[in-house]
Amino acid sequence: AIDITNLRSETGFITSDTGYKSTGATRSAITFLNGEKGILRYRGYPIEQLASQSDFLEVAYLLIYGDLPGKEELESFTHGITRHTLIHEDMKKLYEGYPEKAHPMGVLASMISALSTFYPDAHNTQLHPEQVNLTIRRLIAKSATIAAWSYRKSQGFPIMYPQNRLDYCANFLHMMFALPTEEYEINPTVVKALNTLLILHADHEQNCSTSTVRIAGSSHASLYAAISSGVCALWGPLHGGANQKVIEMLEHIRREGGDVKKMVEKAKDKDSDFRLMGFGHRVYKNFDPRAKIIKKVSDEVLNELGVDDPLLEIATSLEEVALNDSYFVDRKLYPNVDFYSGILYRAIGIPTEMFTVMFALGRLPGWIAQWKEMRDNNEPISRPRQIYVGPTERDYVPLEKR
Ligand code: ACO
Image 1 (cartoon, rainbow, N blue to C red):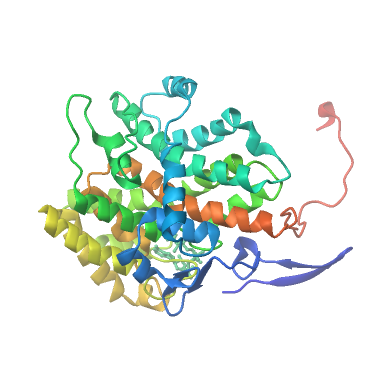
Image 2: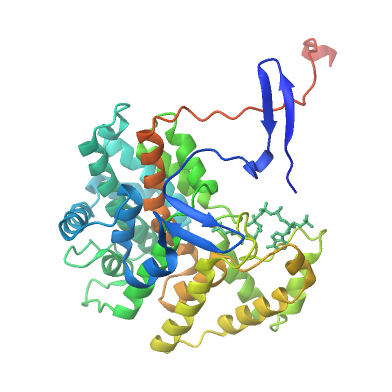
């Protein structure tokens, strides 16, 4: 339901729209989304074409700079990222301070924030294109290293330095899984699947984390600080954290004997406070096009890798039951991108607690593009208004008289 109340204040009208359900916060030329028809395009290119034909860094360039790169532009962009994959040796010491079971999202957010202390040049209020481009390349390159090392740390494994002869996705897999004693064998099916997942996550217009990046950046905080805020916003289970919760939910169903109907009933019960994870979306009132692609790619990849995951069967029957239930049909609740992404991440060996980190790596170019658009357009500082509903004026009462 649309909840808009126009209230007159001393300074004019204020529109009250909690959760920004109908408020356009900006004009943007980056991502087009039609939730009724299930359409998603980056800079005009259909997500289906990009997912099947492009790769992650090319899509990153498209989102950030507005057009597909030419051969030389792509080479220069890729090279610029490759040469910044190392992180400062002093940053390694920070890893020692985290507790053993530190969630990698917490590590990612704080490490990206820490990058701003190593590269204070990004704090300039006046942006210079060369400096902005350098920060963009540093961020994309170093976030992958930071993310992979956060996993190694959580497992007690020695860190793996990047190998810059490898492309972005292969290098990430190497830093995650290689053993110091053996040559890590890159599987092209896994690299392709990872590229697809990252592309599908790369932007989604003014969602919670992206709006956070734009709002934080609107104060002219550095790009590192704005992105770190976005990582924190993404972490929540109603947003990017849902992919981890989906797998935990499917595992729970499996442990309890596979009764998907019971879970659907629980999600319908308004007293239970439980939602079917991976279902529903603020904008899509039809199939999420990304979920359709992931489902198809999952089937292919599981087949090619010979993975037999019982959770896929549970997910498929859960989807079938929910889509035939009037509660979900009436509310137009369809599987979203997170419903099947966990199955695919599992198939390519990514551990569950890293799922939201993978989402963050994928969303990074979108966050950067949105931040850049906001700064290039000289948007003013974001500062929502409110309708005050607290007590009217009252006199202070000393402690002994309360
Ligand atoms: N399970 C059960 N009921 C649901 C679900 C769900 N997954 N999602 C929405 N509903 C119900 C609500 O209870 C509400 O019912 P009511 O009208 O009887 O009160 C109705 O559908 C509308 O839901 P809202 O909360 O108003 O929808 P909103 O747009 O605010 O929320 C959200 C969207 C947060 C994604 C929601 O659907 C949800 O919580 N889904 C589960 C978490 C999830 O999968 N998040 C990932 C989203 S995709 C992403 O961030 C990448």
